[in-house]
Amino acid sequence: DAGITQSPRYKITETGRQVTLMCHQTWSHSYMFWYRQDLGHGLRLIYYSAAADITDKGEVPDGYVVSRSKTENFPLTLESATRSQTSVYFCASSEQTSGGNNEQFFGPGTRLTVL
Amino acid sequence: AQKVTQAQTEISVVEKEDVTLDCVYETRDTTYYLFWYKQPPSGELVFLIRRNSFDEQNEISGRYSWNFQKSTSSFNFTITASQVVDSAVYFCALSESGGGADGLTFGKGTHLIIQP
Image (cartoon, rainbow over all chains, first blue to last red; front, side, top):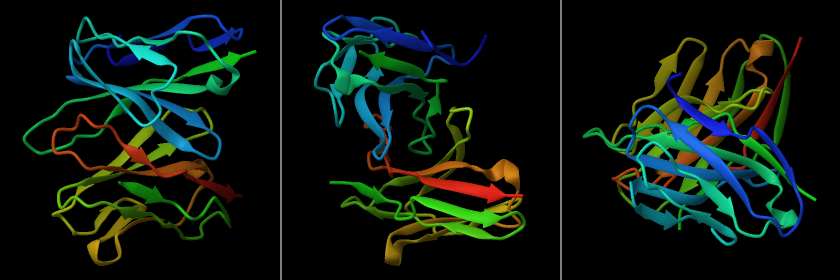
């Protein structure tokens, strides 16, 4: 199916475990992003990527690692999960055109609970 | 640093009333982009509108309209004749970069409740 997908949709893990959230898009968009959504904070940018092998930190990168070996995939890894990382995680993608910053298209989200 | 403020945490109105959601932003850039997204109870984020800093024309799309005023750094969103299906959390967002690579800065959202 075309679009942007995330897996898993729901995940429960324990403190200290490594968790990887997957994001896949079929539009060949150059830009991909990871956000977390927490009550009272809206969405905050964790990491972003302008192209394969190019990634950079956002507002709240601590405790997360990303990679982008292929344009269509942008996995987010929590190296040692903490309870404060309990959140809903959204992946997004967009394409840059001559018209400027285009809208970002969001995946359905992954609800992560760290016990 | 860029910032987006949505001062209204929650708004509740009766169906068919008009409602305006406020958005105030801060940026040092002269080129920037403003967005509104809708998050219905199902949880997905739905794009509504994008506006660049050089286009101050107001926009109307059906029952939705947006008022962009650079003088007050505001980008307000009005729903006319609200419907129950408009119930959602609405986010205003800002992007400063011209390359689209820096991500969006979101406000904390306004929870809109439309009562039948």
